[in-house]
Length: 547
Ligand SMILES: Cc1ncc(Cc2c([C@H](C)O)sc(CCOP(=O)(O)OP(=O)(O)O)c2C)c(N)n1
Ligand SMILES: [Mg+2]
Image 1 (spheres, rainbow, N blue to C red):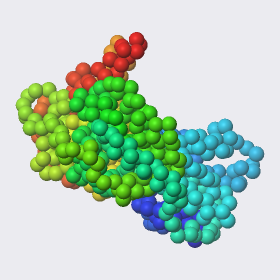
Image 2 (cartoon, rainbow, N blue to C red):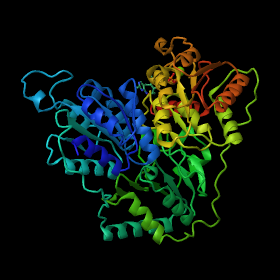
Image 3 (tube, helix red, strand yellow):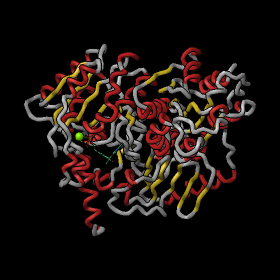
């Protein structure tokens, strides 16, 4: 077997189900083997950011690694931002880059696509991955591949593998069959940590469970739901954890949004004497608009492989071990004097199909009505007010750059979702973000993908305008996105009122043979409820801080 086949088989053994990529001369040999071996399906796109975003979304859907393959230099540097986003949001993407071979390195000449040094790309990717290797030693390759892929799974973070173009066809030993890296947990430390947690919970008067994105990344949603039921205390999700524990019969109260969210729920979290944060990443998006500065000394935080409570830190306690041990030992705590019931979220619905102009909330209502009629669809959201609109849409599988907040994610993530799940997604994207990667819809037909893309066309960088209304650069050109949708191989429909929106959505859902681009005309200044609250929350905080 050659090095590329060994790598492809190892990827498959580690749960990878597809490769997204764009080749180049440094990567042609690897792509040749990938295409001809058919070990994994290969999807190529038009611009490398799409490769990274699609692989990120597929990895999130699988809860397992997915692959972003590119050429060296021009391709690799083009994809740094999407991999930074995957790193920040703990998505296990395997970056595979073709690279210069021994022949290239020994000419003494500068090599095309080279920036500073031949290892510059490796150095840059060290900042956005948790493990890396250049496979320039065939004898070590099986061990190096096993180590890097195990790191990807253990940390749920991207990794970087560079394969020199002159080694791709060299014979190579196979990677030994993959054994999940069962992290050795220090039993006594785990026991002490769980005992301390249960004692604190027993004493707490108003404990609350806050769940975050790691419980999905590490595939422990069911165990977390079982724990939430067993503890019998209120549960909320973070902004990034939106959609977690959906439909799992837990006392879910909603999504914590600080000053931008439901005041009752905000008080529940911020006035709790024992917030227990499971798999939560402490980000400004998750906690930035807290009404009261959260007192992190009183919280229990299990994240990134450690557990902290007050000034104590228990290192090397994997989230999975912590939750399963809590489940094993937790009993109904007295604090749940009366059963905590899930709070029904009042999402907008029953859209009035009239001549009124369209607002982001109307789009949410139209989607909720659709879900009530024919069941939920997965959603990929870009960054912009379309992302905040998802908080008004009923729980469904959702991928979005909720923390790292990069634009351009939406359409590629819709591709990644459909490749990974086979389900038709709805993609929500602003006109500004569509201008970045929306063109990739030209690739939908070749793979039989048929997303329903809703472009929030306010001809504006509206999110920026909310913070800096005086800037003229927030005005965007008026484009005919519906016409562009037709040109890209799908069906484009421009809708200017709520009746047209409802009709277009119904038409799109009924036609499985095409991707649809529904261009919703939205007036500049019309914001989603959540973005309005976020802006108000942040403005209030800045005024309070005298900014
Ligand atoms: C790749 C990239 N470039 C720039 C930004 C900054 C930025 C935003 C965030 C704050 O960083 S929101 C925003 C405007 C988005 O415009 P559009 O897609 O039309 O959505 P909407 O009109 O709903 O705002 C920009 C430029 C970003 N997040 N990601
Ligand atoms: Mg816009």
